Length: 224
Image (tube, rainbow, N blue to C red; front, side):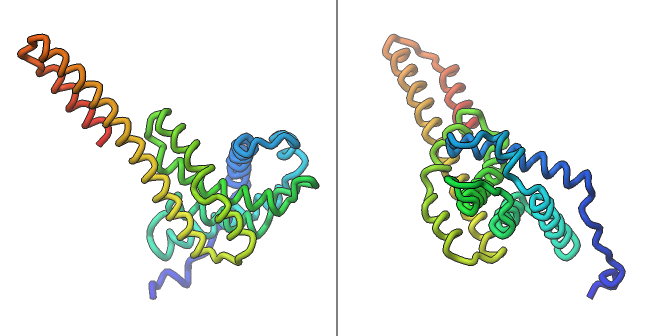
């Protein structure tokens, strides 16, 4: 055992760190309300009246502990996908969103946990991608890939932190595959346009189409 283990002391999350997490939570909640198309409550109404901020702080404290655990025992930072899993797990446990009827607070938290898994992993996969790719993946993945299965699973089963991490990593793979598939479609479309242009020029007697071949190489490099 590392001799430093006995001397190690965990330093709790600071008030500044908790406030930054509240700000991130608020931004996610605004995105979430827009995504579900809720017409009963506005994002501002939920944030100001229907969030237990003490529970939000507890979620961040748990995440902070997990981050320090990985850093100390594994010598590595907690990956984004595992941070998403940790937040989703504790959202299901602490249920920080407290909506009265007709929107049940438990259902709202389940949907928000599902949303967090996708939202955080979207940033991991799409952080450097174009707006067109981000828009496509967000539209097609958030509403299509087994949402009902996730919601039912979160409602009916007691999911461990480790299982939630596996769920999050699976979602990351789904997002990555969707982004790659769409980029491939874009590449094939752009290449087809260039090949059509080259065919017309060659039919018209153009002997040197080097500039088009160069553009084809640029297209391939862009997407690969």
